[in-house]
Amino acid sequence: MDKLAVFCGNAHPKLAKDICKYLKAKLSDATVDRFSEGEIMVKLNENVRGKDVFVVQPTCPPSNDNLMELLILIDALKRSSSQRITAVVPYFGYARQDRKDQPRVPITAKLVANLLTTAGANRILTIDLHAGQIQGFFDIPVDHLFAVGIFIDYLLKIKLEDIVVVSPDVGGIKMARAYAKRLSAGLAIIDKRRDSPDKTEVMHILGEVEGKNAIIVDDLIATGSSLIEAVEAVKKAKCKSIRAAITHGVLSGPAIERLDKCKDLKELIISDTIPLEDIKSHPRLKVLSVADLLGEAIKRIHHEESVSSLFD
Image (cartoon, rainbow, N blue to C red; front, top):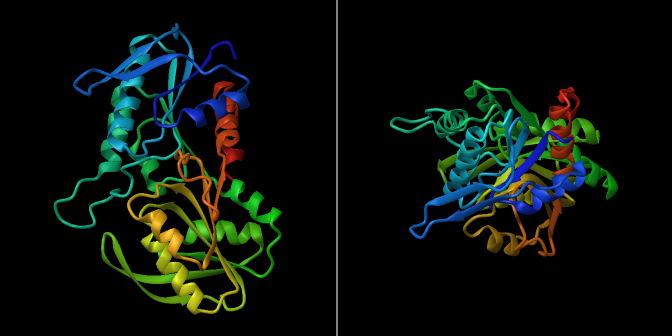
């Protein structure tokens, strides 16, 4: 492990430290600061020549700052003769525009993929991309991990019975099916119509939820509007209890206020791919760590071992 180095920016230093704790390694020293006018300044405070370097930096809010920190860190490592640079991006931002679904819009997921590659990244390690096809936007290897195992372990511990896994939209069927299979549970889908990018209208539920313990699964929660509408729809269908398991807790805008008002949601279970220090004490919020999952992936990549078993 002498050739291994783990760096991080200001996005999520706690996760980087937890990963290093799993690896039994020291977090490498770098200065990531700002010049007086706000430009990002990076300096590596240790030798990385010939090392296998991993940069832990989710592109969560403030997204632009965190993305630029990641790009500049990669450039600094590249110019310092690192042997290989792996960008560990637990939450891959700018992923919601992954195709041209209307005239005159960008494909930002592809743009960010190009930026990371051009900066000097040799490999990408991420968790629960908003769309699986984003892997194809990269011309470098992408290890796409899934947080489902972490959530399943927790859900099995609380010993729920009569479970139905609910996908809040048609696009989330694959994820919902993975949960349903592991929990030996039923599957339901909420058919909805999106009136605008921030507002949806729930239509009806495909599947049986009456009298069951519902678990709504999704890859991210931003403002929380889709989740609240899903909770309301499932509640009207007379389910017993409602929980949500969501990988990336962006929780922007009125999300926490909506969560407080939504008393029908018994528990929101999210991972720590995004820092949640300010709200992790919320009584109905359960935060699960992805540090061990990422740490194991980093260890296997470093030792040139198979990572495929972590995809299951």
